[in-house]
Image (cartoon, rainbow, N blue to C red; front, side, top):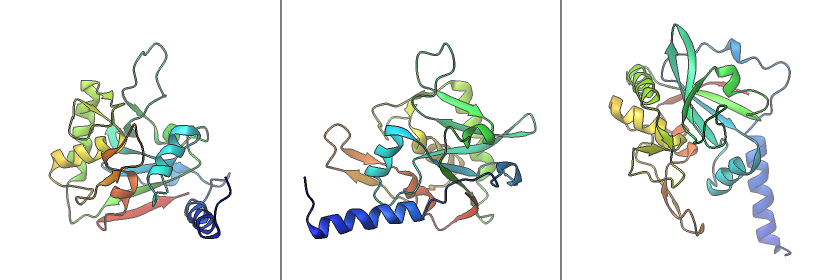
Length: 206
């Protein structure tokens, strides 16, 4: 199908915005340089169909996945939930914990960022503790993407939910409506609904 001039221009502009907003990693990027804090949110743009689908649906989005930084045994790690990253022997997608280096590995992230809630809102540490609590509950991934059901969760729902339990709405009430996706039409929280919150500071980006 050949696009009209206006439609083609829109596609090109959208592509350039996304490309220009995500500076791809190189050998000089080291996540070890980041001074993490509990409750930091880590975003990444991944590879493959699932990442592409999120960015296609999230018109203003740069990143397709998010997790939350926690402290476990005096070491900073990332709690997140995503489909298709099952540990050996697992039969279902579920919440997981891994190092920031693994979360941002070359195999999983084209680019990424770390955001931190400003100090005037002291909810981050509590949110991290809630994330560890959900990790112990072994929460499963929500393949139906139902925001009103917290028994299963998807990635943005997880970080939004733990901050909600800590006392604040990090989406600032923003929701994204999908009406042109027959299977997944509905109301969602996308990564851009969170990192555009004015109370978040960009700490690190690659």
